[in-house]
Image (tube, rainbow, N blue to C red; front, side, top):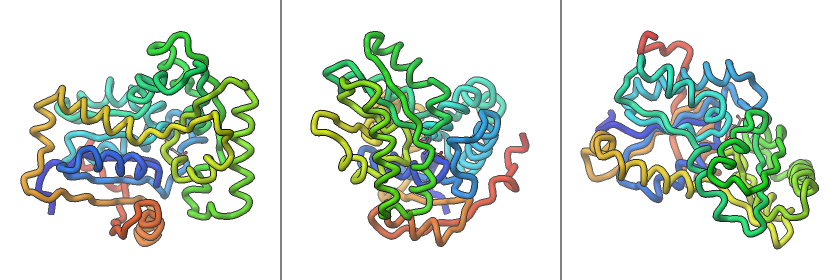
Length: 285
Ligand code: DGL
């Protein structure tokens, strides 16, 4: 039974947990609903139209659960669906609700991390092909040089939960090497896919000392805090009516499998429930 209006956090699968974890550390007083579309991950190789349709279904479902605010904790969905949902769909779904992404908050601050002015971006094929990072970073930091590389094998690796194998070391090394070979002056690598921090140990093991790796969790959490400070109306809507906050986890995949793998990522046991987005057309639009 929901006691307030939770913040919805959406990802194609497990990756958004890396964002939710940091959001909860920064904003512990709210209620949250996490939705992973594990049954249809990965989103990275899928078309613009498919990612948009899947993301829209997820947003509608989270709205139907009472979330007035949904965070697309997924770069691929942020790159391919966010703008259309914000500009075209929200007005029909509910103009008082909001959907935010992870790309803009990241590109607004990423320039602060580099000394050489050269940043490497690792993301899904969809995120890299969208050029969203190139475009957005050039707006905030016109002099910074950006190099991108897609790592299509990394998301299936994380979703499978089987990343402690020797093969996974090779898959991680190959992408890091390819990116760093683009320029010897890259000193900052941004993990522009929320699944990738789950491979952090392996990624760091491949990096030379002069290259730092940046993940998005803290950045998105701080940006959300600032957003809520600027939007008192939203802050009031999501304020919990009781003293302890709740986190509910939903997946389109198998709930037991999600709970056991997510517990590993999350660091403590969680319960998950299965949801079928396709049969949930509650908003009738
Ligand atoms: N975690 C997502 C991202 O940040 C999507 C991964 C995928 O499903 O391919 O891009």
